[in-house]
Image 1 (cartoon, rainbow, N blue to C red):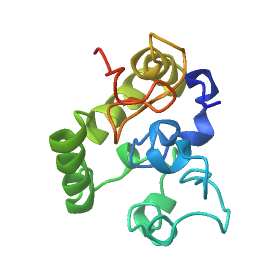
Image 2: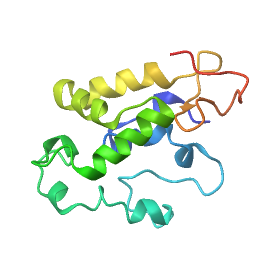
Image 3: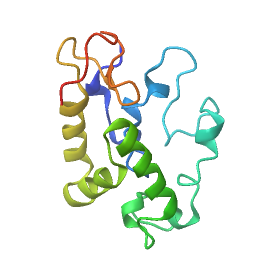
Image 4: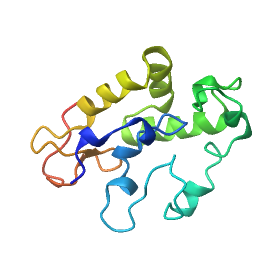
Length: 141
């Protein structure tokens, strides 16, 4: 069970990604524990993420990219463009929301946005539907 109510601050990545809606986090086999986890079970591309491992990020108080003096950097712009184009979600908008309203309000918003209205489970950002209800139950937002 991957209920959206399980979204918490430890699942919000420095780039503004909500790991709780990622296909890697939602899958049953080889489940990714999220960007902020130190687990060895993360996919290699996540372990070597240029944003997560950015030296400038380490210097921020918040540990979010919105606090960086170079926001938006080329890496964040590229990631944001891919997610806006393919998944109708913006990392930069997420970061602005977190900066302006705080992580708690962001999580509240994410729970509303990514909870399946049919079964209450989490809608996958990469698939655009609830993995419990399967493709026949598309997201309605």
